[in-house]
Length: 380
Image (cartoon, rainbow, N blue to C red):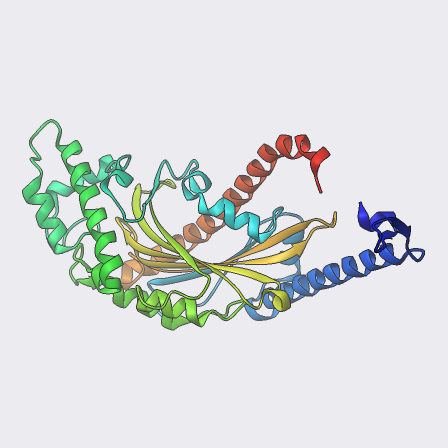
């Protein structure tokens, strides 16, 4: 290696010895600068979590021991929940983003039995593996405006009522085919028209406009480890104003964490931060829920990836996840009893997801070890 040799090439191309320790000193100085920057990033993250969010010293110690730590935030309305979750990861931010872009592989796990990413443009084939949960197939024939266990628009209710022969033996297959068509219609309409295409749920007495609910989340503006006004404005004004350097994709999942299996449709924006050299915060990743068949009126998750150097001196990252959602069942007299339960389950879901992320990162790293070892002789 050039730096270790302590030599350089003269004009005639011959290798000459350099001043004693010059290149080792230069290397050490550069390494010290990197470690210093990482230390500054770690300290600023710890300060943000402790002073701004309210994590305790014990929480931060748990984070350093490898635990996912979660703190719930106060919210302005009862149907809203907000959590900040943090975990250390053994890969640098750029590598995490590469893994995350393969969303079907990255998200699939025990709680996500079905998942698919939309192509550009989205096609019906992107939804081929989506199957309507059995509970929904049983509920849909009974659904009426203002009384339905599935979150649907008035138009969707009508289509399920008129386009599916519920007395037929293959009613479930018909319903799943129609559900795929409607999810595709939603994504296409959203890509053309933005938030106005998200429509209104009529599963309860009062129609609920999804765009209004989402805009209310944006208005709540949580304290964040980095200001990202361009990203938040884009989520509000989509499809106009994609921030420079950002890219995006859409995907759907069936989520099953012990309650009703829930179909969700999401819009993801990956935004590299220009201030990374000074702040250590490399990326903001926004996941905006476009539709959920149960529980959620709307959800926004903002993930921040921070450069970190682990104890062995290797490049790593810290993932800070800020999740805010509006949900069913938390208002009125009944909500007095249900809200603490829903809040606890929501908090647990954030923890389980962060632990899932760490397992996926560790799995990817272990799978990469043989190839890295095999390429060791040719490393430069």
